[in-house]
Image (cartoon, rainbow, N blue to C red):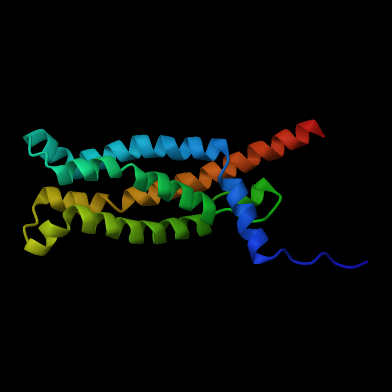
Length: 166
């Protein structure tokens, strides 16, 4: 009896994409984009909206901001899935938290550079800017962890459906 060959790297990536690009995960990513995107716009551009200083740049930033939580949710789901057939193996744990921290540092730094870079470079750091800088990385961390959990719940649901059919 011959052992089954290990799946190729291409099969590995296809399996991950198939698990992530499901309607439940996409719905949760869209939900995160709406809710978290709105919070990010309020955090980063709210003071400008409140004071009536809405420029084209602020409007474009506000319209593009929800894309970030959508992408981070999908990235968190993608990175925390594998080729395992058991949904229980996808339960977010320490590895998911480590990945979410890495995503938070990278994406959070990019968001800070885009939204507060000019203020930081000018050295005009106010308490409000400091709060924005400290809170911003928390958002991609939470959204990435949410994506990992969404992928786990989707795989668990699929596994339960398959068990009930059998």
